[in-house]
Length: 333
Image (cartoon, rainbow, N blue to C red; front, side):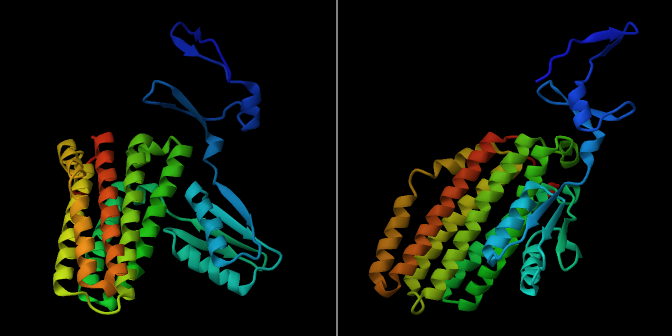
């Protein structure tokens, strides 16, 4: 921490000096341009022009399996690096194939250049091109469709539809990772607040809701897995009970997201009131359905558990609506 006294020159201009060691370290000299950014807290941020250079990192490639390799790249993508260089004495063809597959699963990440010893991945995504409000709306639309289709597939024992739901999970992952990357960039560069049009605190709530919706999509996948594990179709009255519980969960989720989108605290509080009395109905459905069709009991239990968890995620979203009452209506942006 450096302390400086404010001085006055010319009768009306205030000035302070910059610490020489700090200025030297980041390349500031006479004539350098510094951006001064006022903060809502009353502080003033000094941003040297030299800090706008491209962010770059290097990964020393080893004999990793796909999952480890994917984690290495995704972690750098989320942190906000613009260029990720992957190096090895000789990169094997199967490692290049893994790189391409991983890059295709991340919004805006492209192979920019490659040699035998190195591959450059460049993030071409711009925060202005992907407003988080619209991204979150798209995440909800996909999640909502996955959930309703997953329950429909279970009720009708439609294995083709169940597999289709599982394939859509990658679309959710790509968008949620994009939001995570944008949030990291916003934390690192306060100047981006103007481009994004949201404060870091507001963006945190969007990031939180996106994470909750990703978990809902994961449970839609679990319901689809339960469908594929069924020994045969569920009984008509069992399917009817499960669909009724599903409509309840979907309704709670939709109203929670609507409350967040519109900054509607009254609606958020209405959603949270439903925390108190619904779980017992789900447990009754679980018990009676399992008694009527014991051979399907494991799959039925998975579906009920998932619907209960989805309600909990919806309640978390409603809490976010209360914490961020100024959220705007995504549907009108």
